[in-house]
Amino acid sequence: MCACEEEAVGPKGSNPRVQSTCLPSGSNVACTVILYDVPSYGSTRDVTAEATWLVSDPSIGEFFVAGFFRPRTRGEVALWSRYDQWEEVEDLHSWFLVDPSASAQRLYFLAGTVIDAITQAPISAVEVRILDGYSRNARAVTNENGYYKVDRILTGEDFSASASKSGYTSVTQAYRVDSPVGPVGNGPFLDFRLHAE
Image 1 (tube, helix red, strand yellow):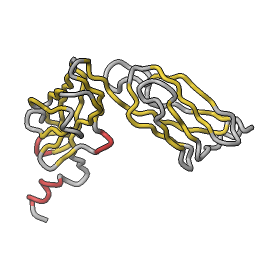
Image 2 (cartoon, rainbow, N blue to C red):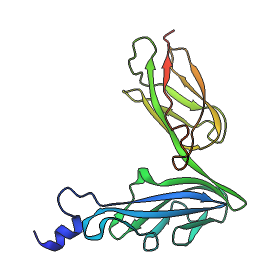
Image 3 (cartoon, rainbow, N blue to C red):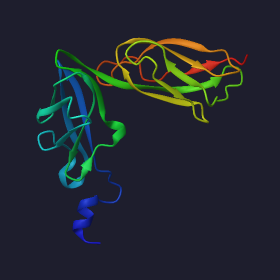
Image 4 (spheres, rainbow, N blue to C red):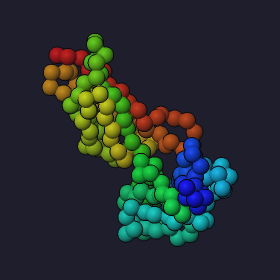
């Protein structure tokens, strides 16, 4: 194997990747990106100014300078970066609700498991639905492990979520998902325990 191939993929055991951190900054969103685990660059390197910045829907807004996104209209956008041959994994894209006349707000997710309250066994095919707030009517159905995930939940907003399946008594819980960046708050995980009818 030639040295150029080793340098491109990194030595055995390395895991080169880029990861952005984005925060609301008034109506704009300010992002930085760090390149991790590339030995020829050191263990980390801030590549914010050199990265290519990407947005899921360019009609909503644009990066007007490296790492600063400005909205033109109201909407939901995912923001992420690419540096050299490394691009962020889709699951790590930062989602925001933006509006040129209001502060940007982070969108995150809600996930958890639904189990039988008596047997503790996971319950599949349970519908978990957001009942109110920005994400009203968003829904997911649990898999064979009782796991569900609802994307693009507005952070910092109180809402109610229900879990229901025929043969079980429905449960509704109040919750709030806080931003994953900043002071510690409510995480994005909400579990349900259902009683058989």
